[in-house]
Length: 145
Image (tube, rainbow, N blue to C red; front, side):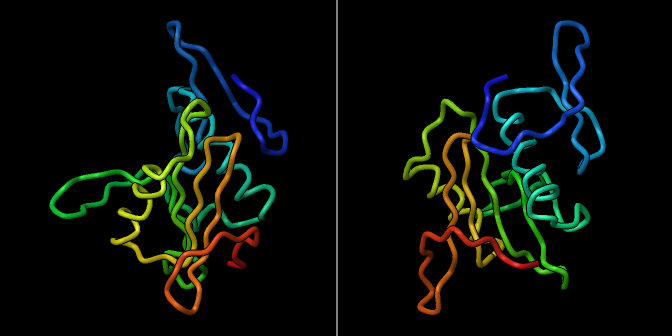
């Protein structure tokens, strides 16, 4: 798989019947290794191994309903009080982080109303924080959980 703009992490990858699988330590199962999953696993490793967020505070690929539509978010990080803190959207490396990507995560956030939004395609990353005026502003500072 393609090298990404994250620290180097060790992953458990195996091949079965001409498909590659990567072990997801949050979901505790093997997942088909797609380019988007490669990015998602790097984001999860970054959260747990680099930022030291407890794995127990991370939800991965769960359903949400917005405007009677069923969707799935990529990653949701909770704070120690169990309140959603950061919504994360992962894209494959060949997908640019466009206005459509930001609109997608902003739409999902209408359900969660988190103070932090993070978008990554593995090569580029965008982090936003909700300011006192209720506007999401770019930041480089991850939340303390």
